[in-house]
Length: 277
Image (tube, rainbow, N blue to C red):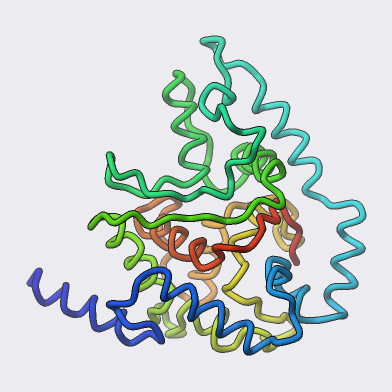
């Protein structure tokens, strides 16, 4: 049964526009080229602005929001919480000594010693538990404020996700790749349907954003949420929209998806936190 499951997994990945044997760098070059060819008038780094890079009317509204962005409160709150001491006298700064230089651009990364993907939110909660504090909720609330503050310090830094030459790292990357391209839910849709094939098209009154650059802006303040959310909160929402059961936040499945998804924006600038509809 294990052999059959492995074979099916390979076939699913092979069915994507990227061959299963392609390297992550090959995947990225093909992914980037698809969008730059599809939207030749969009400067490459402007893809970090989502639909606001594709539609002039949407961009005008967004620029008005950006004059007094709703995420500023989260950044301010996050800065205060980041520097507030834990009960043992330490703070997040002890866990992230290089935070002033920006660290968001390097997350998620694969920890070869532990054999798993580490997201920024995962590192934030690990910092807490290592210092005797309780974990924060994963998808919204205080954790988004702290990650918003850290993201703000990385603005302009280049996304630089690495896939080590390690069997488990490559397996995690391919797991995320498979998730992005696989159909799921009662509507039988993949992430790629909306954010690759039909990117730039309208779905009801909304325009579908490009997968290239999406990971740059998180955490985001969404008007629909009236608050902040992590990228994995958005994954869960997308799964629900296609009538698929969401995975748990920070599950191996969503961590792998975030790993692949963010790698597909390598070379672009961090633009988080950001504001979206």
